[in-house]
Image (cartoon, rainbow, N blue to C red; front, top):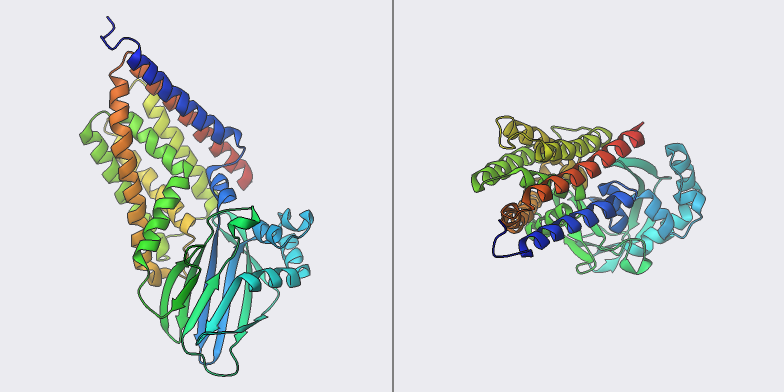
Length: 380
């Protein structure tokens, strides 16, 4: 017998199905994996600034195809996929690249602008399964030994129309005094004073990366679909948090390092596994659940480290930034659980609860399988 609520609960359940279908199909039909989808919308730039006596240098890593587009070069430059061709294009268009970068990234010493000079022909470095152009500059600060150093960045601004909300992650070594921080449109200038990393900036960066990391969001959604009780949710969230925190911090300190061509397909496979648990007839809270969640959580931690772009070069200097970044991830994760789980409980109590859960799980699994196949093909 149908409850007094009539068709209301069923309609609400149907709306959940429709929303899940639209979200899943929009991602799948976008023709790109979640990392690509996220970074076609925004990008991070990386800068290492060093001062040794009177010498100041900066090494910047900028997403290759985005840099070539922003420098308004021909398609043959930004569409180059092979490393050798990218290196050739970077050398051939060195003047255009230098003009673009030096107009948007500046170093000041004691309040006066230093004059940049290109150092070398550049390089290509893979970062998080994407090609980044490495460009280096030395700075003439008037022949004097520079004192207070500041950097400014307006790389890849919203006005160019290619990406939005670009952030430049800066690490510095000023005669042995090290630190790091973030530059964005709201705070484009940073004093390099050897102070501790800016906790709030990296906290917000972690929150942002979870929100735009569609693969991590779908995995979390699949876990929620399979959870039946508050205790199950708490255990699952705790296990996932501990696991990805361990590998995230170890990767950030250079202890663990797996290439993205291995990590990314396995993260997609974790979505499939979590979705299979939802649509199967077995109890999703069985003994295998926690070990599996922990194992896949380890993979997602490596994915978060890849999103931040940490490697051995950043190691201990980024420790507090890594912690802040991870706490930002956890804050958003807890907020999603607090909102989604009560809604899922309400849906399960309706006549359409089980079909809704099954369909949502099947859709999530289908998207995960699509990403897995796409990433494996891309890695071949």
